[in-house]
Each structure stands twice: as C-alpha cells, then as structure tokens.
Length: 391
Ligand SMILES: [Zn+2]
Image (cartoon, rainbow, N blue to C red; front, side):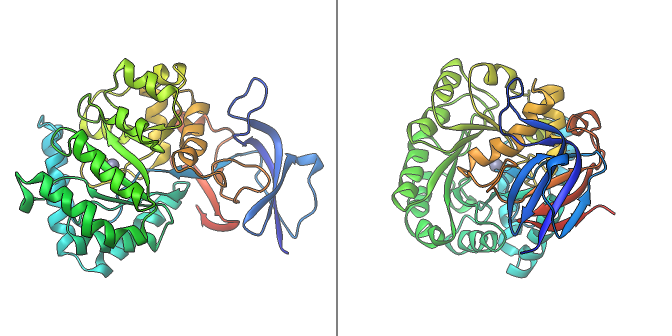
C-alpha cells in the first residue's frame, strides 16, 4: 500500500490530551498516512519510512476542521438585508422566507452547482467534514430535494423542515408541524442522519419543537436543536432532556441552562459568525468552559445571519470576543465539532483516525487568531487524499 509521511512539522495539534496541554501538541513531529487513515504519529526523528515524504518545513499541522452546523443548499442572496441590518434594522427569523422563495424557484442543477462551490470553498479553508441542513424548502417535495442534494456531498445531513413556518401556513403553525412530522419526515428520513428544529420566538414553541424532535427520534434520526439565538427560552432544557448531540447558538443562556449543559452529553455549538453578522452580543464562552460545558465552534453558513464559510475567521472571533484561548478555539473547531456530530473517527490526529489534516502556512495554530483574515491554509488532506493546495 502507498504510504505518505508528513514530516518536519513544527507544531502538531493532535487533540490527544497531554500533561499540561489538554489540547495536545507535539513539537518536531511526523504523521504517517496509510490509505484513508493515520497509521502512526510521533517525533520526526523516529518516523518510519514511506513511499512519499512531504516536508512541512517547520510549519504547523492541525486536524481538518469539523463544521457541525451549516445551511448550504439554497438559492438567492440577502446582501440588501445585511446592508439594512448594518444600518440599524434588527435581525428576525422571518428573513428565512425570502430564501425559501428563491430556493423553491431553483432547479436541482442550480442548487447542486452552488452547493459544490461551497464545499470547495470550505475545503480551501481547512474544513474536511461539514454538516448540512435542509430548511429552505418547507414543502414535502422541496425539503426532500434539499436533503437528497446534501446527501450527495456529506453523510452528516440534517432534516430541518421546522426551520420557520412558511408563508402559506401563516397562523396555522400546528398544521405545518403536522406536515413536518408526517409526510415531510417520511420523505426526508431516508436521506438524513439528524432531526433539527428552530426553537425560538418567531419560529417554533417548545411544545411544537418536542413534537418534531420526538417524531424524528421515532424514525431513527438523532436530535440537535437551534435555540436561545434571539433570547432566552426552554430550548436548551428540551435538548438536554431528549439527549440531543448539540444545542446550537446559545447566545442567551440562563444559569440553569449552563448547569444543565455541564452535566449532560449535549455539546454547545457556538456560531460566532452569527453574532458578528447580526450585531448581537457574543456569548461568554469562557464562563461556559469554566462551568464544564463542552463547546464546539461552527460557521452556520447561511445567506441570512452568517454568510461566512471560514472556520479560521470564527476561531479569530472566538478568541478575540468570546474568551477562548487559541488552543481551545482550535479544539472546539475540530474535536468539539466531532463530538457535536457524535463521531470518533475525525477531529484528532491519532492512529486509526481518518487522515483529515491541514498544513498551515504558519509556525503555530495561534496564527489562526493572531492573523485574522489572512489565508493560512496551505494544504488539506481528506481521507488521506491531498484535496487542496494553496499554490
Ligand atoms: Zn443554523
């Protein structure tokens, strides 16, 4: 079998805890790739032989980013809404409906071309695993189309029929939930791994959210929840009670929410691009980590509230404005994302894991926050295959 040795790594982030270094790094390291897996990790001086040898030149290598929250299947653009918001108009959940209209009007091939473009965009920024949600179809046929297209590019597909109540169901939210938990779930479950709901004022109540999640669980889908984005609510409590893999946003958390998350297996996925793009206050991630909550970082790429696909940008914000150290932010964007997707084969650099690696054009991962906006991703391997080279 062909093997590749990536050696001369100045700083290797393994995410396997070491004494005094919970996020795990090795200096002067090497990694052996065999097929789609990592076969060996250690000091460069002890490295085994390989058919191909690549010298990292003293630069840093990190695990591929695991972006556990995105909405990449859509059509249209909401730049004007963003511009109005920057001029003072507040963000509301209702803007989703304009993307729904554009998405319904697009063909499969148009949606697929845009989706493939986004996946390439993410890869060039170091993301090797991405979760993709539906939620801009909101009819049986359109939601089925979105999860089917998402399943062409990732196994991490989430059915989010309960994203917002569509215009044709205005004032009939419960009737729309009947559709979501009935024929829409029947059509989407075969393409989906996850069930999600937007549990928020202006979207779905706790009782409606519970119906959606329980129906998904009964069909073998695992729950994750959008909650506490626009204000405090009971979404976190519901997510923890139902054993959700993740509750996402958490911009407004109560003390009771933090306590409940700290003693649960539910990851809190922070989406700094949303606060950045909506001018909402950043959650205090320092307080969450100190309380024992497991935190992941994701981009929430979507045309309304966060149209960035850059995990390095989100890491920079998490360090600058949320109180994470650079090491904690990189951990949250890799190992944290893997936990938010309940995956044990990605998110770390260790023997047996998938060979998803990013070579940075920098001596240390700190540069991801220290040099915001600078493209530092030099090469990306996914499943052992070199998929991106900067030059
Ligand atoms: Zn979202």
